[in-house]
Length: 423
Ligand SMILES: Cc1cc2nc3c(=O)[nH]c(=O)nc-3n(C[C@H](O)[C@H](O)[C@H](O)COP(=O)(O)OP(=O)(O)OC[C@H]3O[C@@H](n4cnc5c(N)ncnc54)[C@H](O)[C@@H]3O)c2cc1C
Image (cartoon, rainbow, N blue to C red; front, side):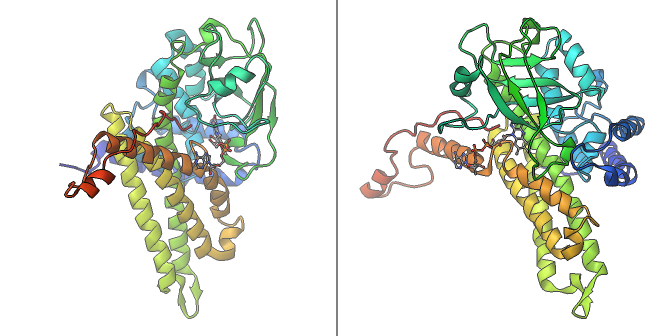
């Protein structure tokens, strides 16, 4: 039977994380700078307090100083951390560091873990995961399962990419690409100094973006003649696609967990406002159209939470959960967007101003429908899996009662659907 009861120790951890975010993290929000995020000294102090509170690095294996939670447990704690945009940073479980730590813990050698994972866990450096590239001169397919199309043409010359962490403290690039020669590796790791052929990695702030303040903004990175030593190659050559799967499906889900927290807080703010503000002779919350917005948001948050928990359960059971995480990512990214949008509507000009954090939530939540695979690409992949399964079982769900029915339920040809990975 399905049991949704939280074990007492997990419920206690959730409460501790909630209290920490309320009492320690949210009071720091006014200090977040539009481009640089929370000043480093404040972030370091917050992380020290998160360690003392026993909630630091919830996803990191215990031997590396984390809490060693599984995905279901993470979904509880990450949601709490996500109630503030800087909560995941405080607990050191923000994207993309969290996903990169996971990959390093699973795939890295002992030496690589010491060199790259330890400073990440300790919060001394930040990392990026470099996979998508901007379009160049001519249109080309943007299928992350086949990065060689782009990498073959570009690596060795110039590779340019919008990445998503601030340049300051950015030390670790996880580059996903393929190279023509076997000795140029599918996945590269770069700790800039001391390489034979120095990669040039200029970090510069990107143009102002919708979500510039989140996690310290974004920067653009160019890879020119980027080559690294053997010790910086992560895992076996040619296995980059597999390793990306190790990272991407869980990381997609942890994004959902964090954004769920943001949206849940947005609903709390909207409900509080609707109770306290009167309009047309009664509290806003007594107007049925406001109630509809609140009810729709509550239902969508609930459905999002259940999708996350289910996908987490599949991963904890050893599954890849590619379909489940694609469905959760698509649904949750769109649901949290609507929830924050409704909260902004309910709170009117107060929501639009910086009096409330909703305007910032609104800016920051929107790109989630694009990164980690746009909704359209996930929908395509979800449907392709369904169609493949249906093609493997002709007439699934339909009894071929007549020759006409038999004809239309026999696949014309097997769909030629490539394995597709969304980033
Ligand atoms: C805030 C942010 C953080 C990011 N972080 C990272 C990161 O850490 N690492 C990394 O490698 N990349 C990252 N990205 C890049 C991100 O993954 C890409 O932006 C995303 O995959 C979309 O690619 P694109 O921007 O090149 O848009 P395009 O590929 O040009 O797509 C534009 C739009 O076209 C539509 N579209 C595309 N393909 C299809 C299709 N098959 N069917 C129907 N419609 C389609 C979608 O609506 C899509 O939004 C980040 C992006 C943002 C905005």
